[in-house]
Image (tube, rainbow, N blue to C red; front, side):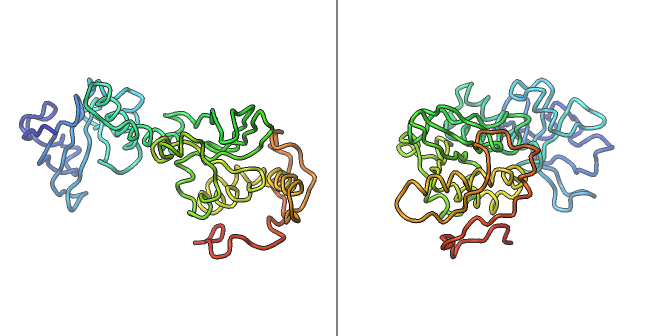
Length: 291
């Protein structure tokens, strides 16, 4: 990064912030990250005892679109100048992605996997900016015939061979216990390249749908209100799949529509059935909603 002395910064000849922002501290270091975006470090102040780090975005920066600038905080006396707490706070992942995207597009080499990872994280935490996760276009069991979103990044999928399962995107499944991930199936591409590089999907076949359901409830609790209404469909699918294979099914059959039916507003979210009636295969793993 190219370094500038405070006096050389184009937005503040005196080297500091405008008076009404003086509690942020005096600028003691500034580096140009990319055109129109500076990393700045401020000295200790009334508000920040040990100083602070920021990314400051100028209005003419070609790297940061207006939609991304809206996540920063304008300076009251210079509203065209926008601050982002460096590497912390809301909006930083958006700014970081746009910087890396600009650098890649302009010949500053960035690994393709880096942008894929940042985009995947962005779709999880900032879907209003990046959009929601798209449905998987391939599965370990062949091309998907249809899919339905249960929550952002979690899908029912059915293949042309009538294989039914659940797909969970990489950035969400990354929170799962490794035991839960060990039961998932990956596409050939994700196995060859590495799902951490493709940011693809973990797939769970119909007889193991309890795995992603329990994992989502335990490790992604903000999804609970979205997935709990699907519990009857999950239990039925497991029951149907288990009853066609060798051995006794450990799951109770209940009255429930097809998983692709619209379950909203039908009262099933109050279902109080038991997920497991047989041996608890999760012994030793963290329990759902445990601290």
